[in-house]
Length: 334
Image (cartoon, rainbow, N blue to C red; front, side, top):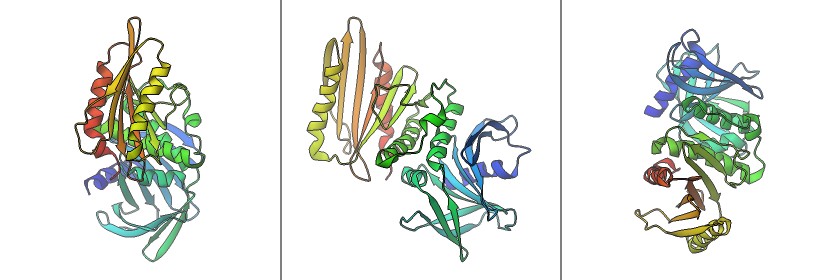
């Protein structure tokens, strides 16, 4: 309930208090009119959102707030809703399974479904074509064109507002529509990255592009001061593959190292973590360190989380890895 109310307050700034809310940035993603917003004229950044109007008169808004919680809101100028009440409804994305949920009425013209940090729903909306909502004996259908571009663009918008840093490739290039299942994994890994780093307390991070780090083959890449990280999704891996995974990780790093190479397994300090591995490559006086963590994936398979330093002290990567390990099972889908 607290997550929904928090998102509801943000939604109100978008559509119903334009004289008070300030738009910090404006951009278009297909038919979605998008931007970054503050919580008042002189206020701090609160959220990024994209809105689209439909022939029915309904305006659909997708948003992600500064805590990387997200939601979808529906508004219509002719509605006369009772603020503070709940609307029981069901929704279906494409031909998927109907899901019952509750929308919070945030004004007499608008209602909000808050999804918190649910990456499964994020992925579902990213790859969907149509959204159908059944409420009050009516069925509404909405086209989800370009949500595969919009949602990652909103994630990037939030990251840039919280941690201003130069981005070397355009959002449009990075957020091209997913192709097949790998695109679904990228959307899943991106939202998990944002949630995980936020909960881990890692500041100054941004979601990076594949073009910035072409040597890193990953479903999501992030960068912060002196630290780079990745997430890979191995959808078919199981516990019996752990020894092979451990050997492959160390073997790949050893092959790439042109100097002295050190590696090893780190004792597991939790019941749910699968493997922890580190490797260090030292060339003359320069060393690069990698920390790996493998954890189970709710939908099946394994996440491989990598934290690394490009050069110099291993301390930033070690500290980031420790923070991520503490937060990982809170941030991952349950």
